[in-house]
Image 1 (cartoon, rainbow, N blue to C red):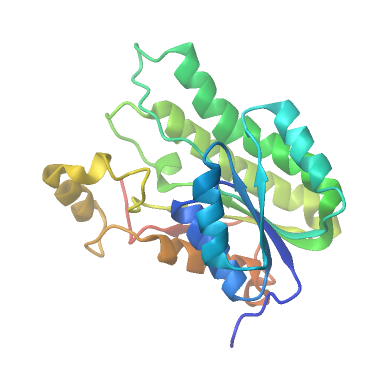
Image 2: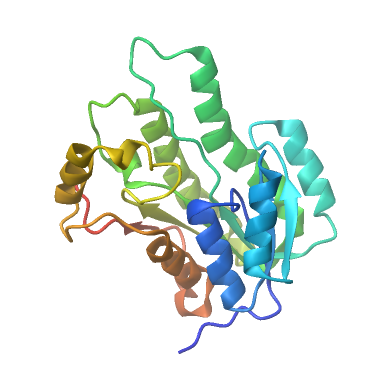
Amino acid sequence: METSLTGQTALVTGSSRGIGKAIASKLSGAGANIVLHYHTNREAAERAAADIGSNCVIAQADLSSPSDIERLAGELRETRLDILVNNAGVWRSSPLGSTTLEVANEVLLTNVLGVFWLTQALLPSLRDGARIVNISSVAGRTASAEGRSLYRASKAAVDAFTRNWALELAPRRIRVNAVAPGMVETEMTDEYLRSAETRTRLEKRHPLGKLGDVDEVADAVLFLCSDESRFVTGQSLNVSGGFVI
């Protein structure tokens, strides 16, 4: 069955590059109109929009800022959204004992409160029967000694949002699900994966023997945005090659 989102409108946060861009491209390829969100790099957003096509518009906001979120929601007030993909996030080292308030605020304001406030602000713009897909991570349900406990906690919070919002929004037939990638090769993880030792170690933690790519994550998001998943809500789908603790 060919998935069609023709005539629908999707906002994908953090979609100027990486997983977000792949998601926006995949939804566009299925016929959706795209609102491509970016934070600071307008040139990258413009390049991504040009790649996606004429059915794509650009929107800027700092999702760690409640006032910026309210501004963005106001700009989209007349846009009826069928799909919201909460993809934007930051990945920072935060060892217990040496994490600064600045780093803690950056991670938690963007990855947790930004997701919460944006979704709340956009509720009036979401059609009944809309779909929300949160990009979580297997990091939210695994552990390591690498000093990223704040990031892991932030993704666990996204999974909690997903379950609870599925119940809260069910009366409006809004389905809420999450996609939890394993380690995916993107611009954000490029420096981390430059070490051959690190890459080999992570590949071994994925039973399928490889790291993920952005299109594999985007395919899962497309499924959760489509009628093929019409009886699925409140779920977090691991797209991780079997990544386990």
